Image (tube, rainbow, N blue to C red; front, side):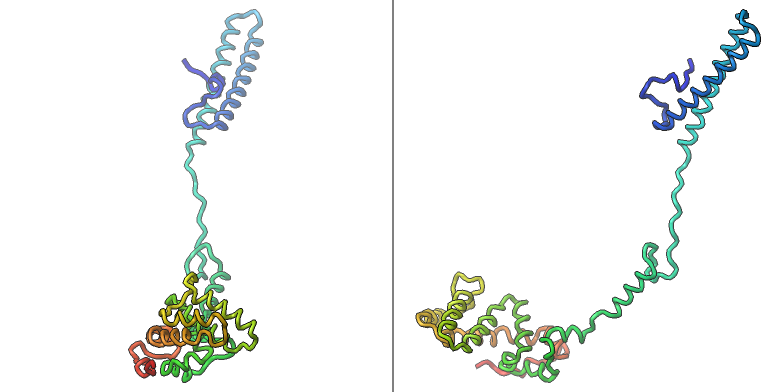
Length: 279
């Protein structure tokens, strides 16, 4: 038993047909059915209203035309649904692009090239280590490797040494030493007392995360001096931390790649061999 698309139940469709294809097939089948009915009516009228055989032949012709229209519409829809998909043509790579990627533009390539050419040089990186407008000479930088006192009395030397201590997680030593130096410059008793209290809380107290390493003897001296703080309250502690930096951190600083780059020394140079011995 054959059937048309129009005779399919609602919600059903042939294999390989989507909803839009089924709708198109149903519309084509309905149009073919209307044409068949018209042809059957014309044939019946031509033969005569009283001829049963002629009417029967007209109905058969209309039914045959309907089936042929349905099959033809279904075949067209299936052919369209089974047609191979065509991929869009990819864009050809730009012939001016040095990186050979099709997504970039000539202007972008120029921007990348200019950024590489304008990248900071080794000399610029060395200059960035120092304070603005106060770049030391090469001879001055090399003098830091001969004397720890020259390093600590030079503002740029202290900055470079402080960056090195930060990399070793011991920056609190030089911060404490600098705070003691700043305390010695004060004349007002109120300011001295306030700064001494802050120094004690930041670097002497055992509760501080930046506590410096002091022995029990020096810590006891500082506690006694805090009863009546003066500009010399932390002298013993400052000397001990200064000696610690000189003996422990300073030799590693001279052997660091950071200092060798600044002093333009070779890796196998013995710049620190002539450094003054700690007292």
